[in-house]
Length: 436
Image (cartoon, rainbow, N blue to C red):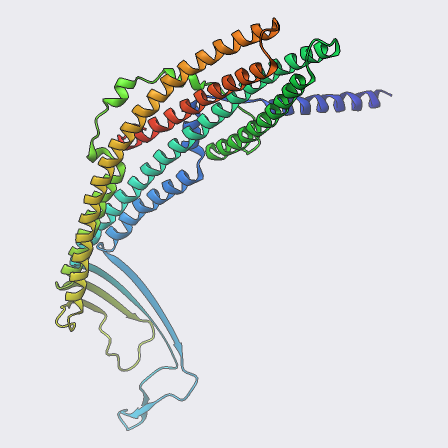
């Protein structure tokens, strides 16, 4: 009996522990926008891949450097001759002497050193430029991820707050529908007015369901971006209105546009640098390549005759002489690529300047729309309140009330959409001014 009690106690403890673990696992994650962006910086697979590329680029620098450092190799050979052994009559009395052995083994050790190579010098510079390209690619990826996370975060806030407005209006309409139904039952209201309210309630329910589905999709997208399981429950602590109110319009507008700080322009400059190195590489192919080496040879089973020196020093010089215009053609192709890279830089400068001007104008326009939408929402709220009072006193019809409610709903929804557009416009402006 005691054993059964102990087993039941342990089972209850395990069940309780499992329930506690489940509760802990179901605990919501509360995230500010900054925390969501930081989580994406740590967990985004795209950023992790970019970091791996940067680490590989660092290794590539040493790989290139090592080609100009001393290289040592050793080679061991063993051979067995199953056939007849060649001989020559070279003995004192004319006897046959073998001039080779049935088995042989030898060791060759070589140490080489590159003395001069134009391609090696250019290659060192190119490997460092490649690391710079990868570093800038990582920076751009981080900016893009921060931007994407911010837009997903804002979209969740937009859909969530829109859903709350719809729920509130649905509650009000349900109450009015219930009151109108009671008045209809007593003969103090028309059936058409009640039906009109019922249609509005049904339409509102469909709108609410659609918004809630959009919110679910946006939450899964944010979870994906910050490295969480898609169905992880998260709570966003920031509010759309608070974020908008925290915007200093004058500060945003007066943020200077520095072309050399923009990541896209810096990548265009680095591209010019890489094409110049390619041009230099093709030019140095006209230069000779010089290398030195030392070789040690050891024969473990010497034959009678051996023509291999035990030690040897050497110098190798490769001089390009004639390639039927091949090298010249490569130089000209590299020069054309360099010209194209310069054109790409100029095009990037113009495009980014235009992007800044357009983003600045769009932000100003979005700000004016935001102010107008706030004013319209306040007026619609006042109108709806007045019409509701008139309706309760029999001075307004259900159609009047429905129209006032629809107008209020539209202005509130427009306000949230305008706030969302304003924040997107700010993200666009922050990206081009390198402030994201």
